[in-house]
Structure formats: structure tokens, C-alpha cells
Length: 395
Image (cartoon, rainbow, N blue to C red; front, side, top):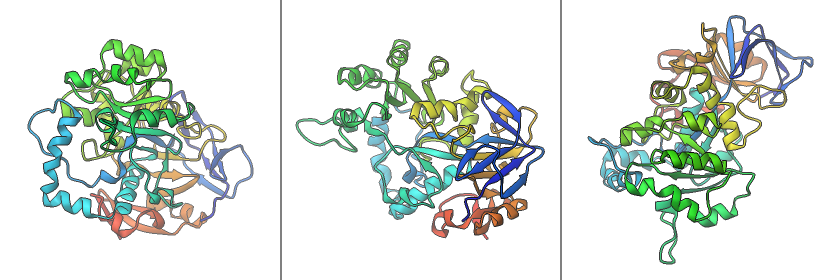
């Protein structure tokens, strides 16, 4: 693969702060100045948007069948207890039996297909995530615990899952985010979790709370006052609990980002999540774009992601021009994306971009995505991974 100097011409570049008709130059995997180029791509009548940031996923769980239930759960801990019996389901057992490396890769592929080029994976780090061909970029420098219920050490014993809460927080440098599921439910336990976290000394300006539907108005004010942040996962919240948080106050403070969770409880992908977020909030299309680009970059401390300014990573999504540029991804099917670009090189695109792949020295494979023909970089879609993704057919 050649990391060539490339210019994307005649398109409109769309970021939350405006729409500008300008050429976009890539060099060395970054957005560059107007230096000489080797590859020219004519994108008249197209829009170029930054690669999206999915602020919360569990990559290895995206092929596990969801738990069917008839009434809302009171908390994530009640869901966990109920899910334990779900392991007896043959389909669940078969999904979990797939090698972990393949399941993690599938989670990355799921995100890539929807234009999410950077993902925060909230679980132990698997070695496959360091493969140079892994489909997406990942949050690298951060600390985490799963939740208070699973991460508190009791009676001198180890946590039930993941790092111990207090120890993990203390070990995380303050310039890096520290991530934990919190207030994921509607019962009194969920509503008390922010206070408990604060008493433990783990609420600070690098704390990132996932879900937060049990936060009261006073709790939200405290989160903002401390400089902490929340990752909003409305599909997962609505599916598990029947409600989700009101995002406006956190959004106005730029202390909010959007995540899908895994398909085990959440939406299919970030495109679907954007549509749900629009339906269940008063955020405009322009504000939603900010949520999955610059605001996510700020919350997760990823200065090179979420934008197309000089020096940022050359990740972008290309679509045909729309009457409302800021909403051009909302309600869009993933098959509608003309191209997804990682580090200045196309990874999946419509067949008429074949020359672009060729000029970059990228070996491709023909695929069908939700009925639409596409070309994909062969290295990102191993057959055993493609088999896990509904709607994706090799050949």
C-alpha cells in the first residue's frame, strides 16, 4: 500500500463549524497543506466529512444475539443477572465460541462500514487490536473500570470484572480519560452511583461516565462543574430501560459524546445511533455532527481525530451532496456512503473509485453491502470476519 500525496478536489468539506468548498490534501496519513500531489480524485457534487468517532463499544460482542425481554430492566446489574441464563442459548454459545481475535476484528469492521473510523473499546485490550490492518483507529491512552458493581473490591477480594475502580483511577494520568459505566439504570442504586464515585475520589476532569441515565439534574450539574463527561448511548438505554437521558445541558457544556454500545444491547452502528439520537433529543443535525466529531475528540482527548484541520489524521467519509450538508449522514444507509477513508487511503468505496485504490497500491476485494456493490481493502475483511456481518457478502 502506498501512502501517497493525494488531493480530493471540487468537493465541499463539512465540519460542524461550517461548509467550505476547498481541495483537501493528504500526505503521510495526515491532512496536509497544498503540497504537490501524486493522486487527484475528482469529487464534484460530493461532501467530505470527518471520520466519525464512536465513543463507546465492546468490539468483541457485536455478533452475540441480544437478550429478548418483555419489560424494562431496573439497572444494568439486573440485566447482567438475567443474561447469565442466556448463555444456555445455542446461538449465544456458538457466537461466543468464535475466536476472540475474529470477534474483535468484526467489531472494528462493523464500525468502519458505517464511517466510524475511531472507536473507544471499553474492555481488556486484545493483541489483535494492534494489527496494522485493523479496520479502525482506537482510543489508545486511557484508564477504565467496568462499573461500580463489577469493579469494586469487596472483603479483600478482586473485582468481578476488569480493573478495580479506585486503583485504576489512581493509576490513570490526569491528561488521559478514565472511563466507567455509571448510573446505568433507573433504580435507587443507579441514582446513587455518582455520589458513591465521588466519595471514592474518582470524579474528576478526566472521568468519562458511560450511559448516565440515573443522573439527576443536580448530578448533571456536578458532572459539568467537575469537568467530567458522559457518553450517551440512547439505543442501548431505550432498549434496556425504556428511557434515555436529556442531552442538552451536557451538550452545551461540551461534556457529551455519542456511543453505540455493542449490538448485544445497542444499535447496529453509529449511523443508526445518530438517527435515534435525533428522534430522542432536541439536538439539531449540526449539533449531532459535532457530537460524533469534535466533541468526542475533546471528551476522549483525541486531538488528531474528529476533524479535517491541518495535521489531523486523514480519516473521512464521502457522500453525494445533500441539500442539508450537516444532516447528510442522518438517516443515511451505510450502503449510501460513497467512500470511507483511513489515513488518506480508501478502505471501502463504490466501484467507480477503483482507480483510487489502484493508485494507492491497495489490493481490493469485491463485496456486496446491503445489496450495493462495493470495493474493500482486502486486508481489512478476512472471510471468517465477513461471515459474521449481516448484509456483507464477499465476491
